[in-house]
Image (cartoon, rainbow, N blue to C red; front, side):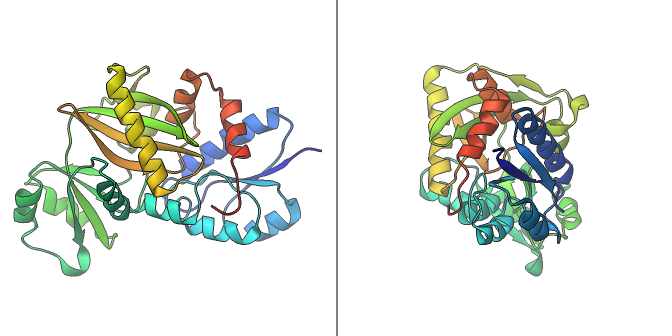
Length: 304
């Protein structure tokens, strides 16, 4: 009998289009392998779709807010149907850049210094505080968005203007800017899957560099680093995966500067589009897209 897989994709986050693409790519692969597939939005019809379709597994292909921040995971727990990727707590921690950074620091995982800017108590001395604690340039970003949505590199001259433009968020993170090389590491369960280096033509690896084919970001695999250095960054990624309590596949974003690795963040639901990094890393490690998706399904569980 065909296994029934309900794919959750779309949603209301700023990463909706990426989620739809991930859902489509996963559905295409599973249809080739005799699964019965239904794609569903996480909307008011979700309960009806689950009751009528009666899936064996729910593949969570959502990205961003409400999809990988513990919100949809809380709902999925109620159905007692195995679902993919990380659970409620690990998803919410990983999506919250402040909480995850505190955990990185506590566990001696090197990460850029930062401060939190709250809009309920706007600080006219923010420039001076940045100069004292971080120095310019800095990176300003939302605390709970993914895919580098609304991420800006700021100087002393434009930081106040950028902060003003981001008032839609209650808080933002101001982080020291780390130059150097962009290294991404994929973890699959408790296995160090591999690493890839990115050379964006843009200032940094932002949303456009990730998902726009015209951005011409160069993907370099294998990464040109000594084995000892690669072991260090992959061990850091595995440690982050474990201390956050993640399940399934994760991708950690690093910068390599002045002979040091800095963990920027961990992604609990990496994309599965044609431009996505985890399938590329997996393929280089000898795991094709079909095998990757099959493994993610087998790893699905109800309580995380």
